[in-house]
Image (cartoon, rainbow over all chains, first blue to last red; front, side):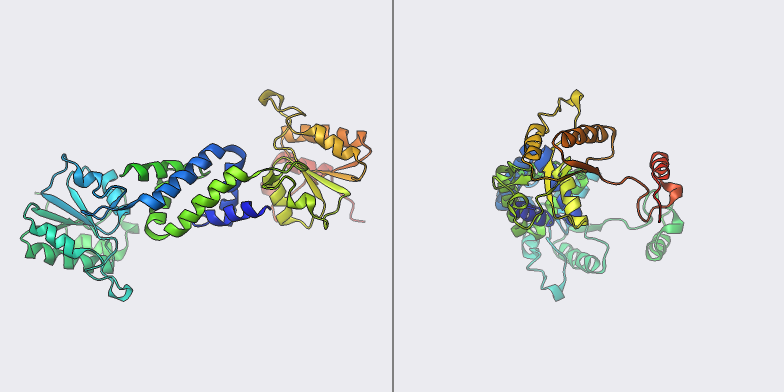
Length: 197
Length: 197
């Protein structure tokens, strides 16, 4: 195989979920059938890697200093949703009708990995909470040990600024069968059962 | 989501087997964790799409006028293996110990799609057969209707140049169970049974 083709196959393996076999299939597909879109991908990818930074206000990915969401006048400025990463922001945007603003931690509190309040931009978050505009802070960190610890810290931060902290509901997923729900979730859902009246 | 990020996700969908969800995962992964390799991919991809052409001798992908395989002095010049596409050439190279040369049709005879002998470079193949160096032509087209028709045509071409045509063996795949082998293959394997003495 030619040097350049080998390099291309190797480079494609940086994509998550793409091993040697898929990378080869991708390379051959582009070369045989879709050079134009391959060129376009190369160009957009280069530009994205170079230009996409983080919004100075919410830390979400953005190629402008302030992102669309933060500069939009149609988003509710009284509610702020805190997420760990842009992936989770995208998931919430796609699944819910949420119309407030966001703050992206770009991580979770994890002292062992060197991720403290400063790395997560919590000083900037505290500043924003202090501006007095925000009334509710929705904490949407992941339900992992570190995510929960982060949530705890965030709740204190909100209370200190007189902002009401809320947390995503935990419980049995819709469409799931009780039999297959993990014990921890089931116990939590049982303990947090809600009155139907 | 920012315009550039949306563009990147859309562009990634040109890869085979990548839908909207995977494309989004890939884009976020590269931006969050692997910008350097993303940059490298962009650069190699651009170069590959622009520079990789076809070898003037065997029509395989190559960024040089004549590919490594054709210019190699360690490959047997008496045997020529004809395949439909570079993918199949790669599969044969990776699976077998074949040390001869190749010719890539870049398609199969398919008059309805406008693919005739000329598009498959059969004039060039005939020329090569006429040079007198080749003794055996291994026909490794796919075992589809069109592939078989192409094989038939190629065999005639070889015979006309006094080259012995051979064909990949058809039969039950190794490790397969007879119960699950399709009828056509089983009937063929049965009819072509070989003596063990």
